[in-house]
Length: 251
Image (cartoon, rainbow, N blue to C red; front, side, top):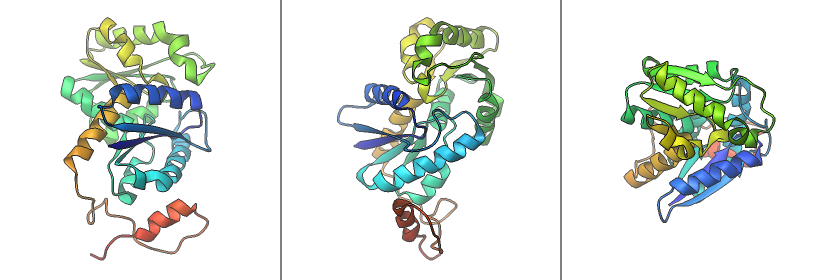
């Protein structure tokens, strides 16, 4: 089984964190590879940056999907996953959806631990879009500038742990979701010090992707996730143009 994780921001240090946690989570025999966006922002924090990241992820997915059994869009907020599900014949998994599904299997109410205050409104909207806003206990976040996105865990480790404990003690969280690729692996390192289950997006996404591949679902040919219809286009990268040329089958 080959799983491709796409980091839709440009930080190679974050890709390294993603790859390390993905390899820890992968089953024996699963091959993991990670690609970093060739353009965009250092880390996604806003809705507009998510649009950029979605396009960056799409360009990489279009070029590499056929060599893989599943794709993980490795950013919290899941930029572009629904569009990729329309275009690709393999499972596409996002960190948020995967972490949400894991959290819902472990408890009733969950809290999200985030890297910045600006990011929290968008995260709340993503939870709402997944139909789980009533199970969200809180979103707690760091509130200081990030000096190095690849060193957030090292620079703010104690504060992140304190946020987790506050979500349990003050907000009634049954499960903690550690949000964002820059925090990949943190759940594994602190889980013995937090009194409720702690869920990581990267490891959840890898495990759910493996499950979907094993289930061998048929690709959508009708419904809202059928491939986009063929139509004139211009100025697109070659890989995306090839995906669009595949098109939907006649109804």
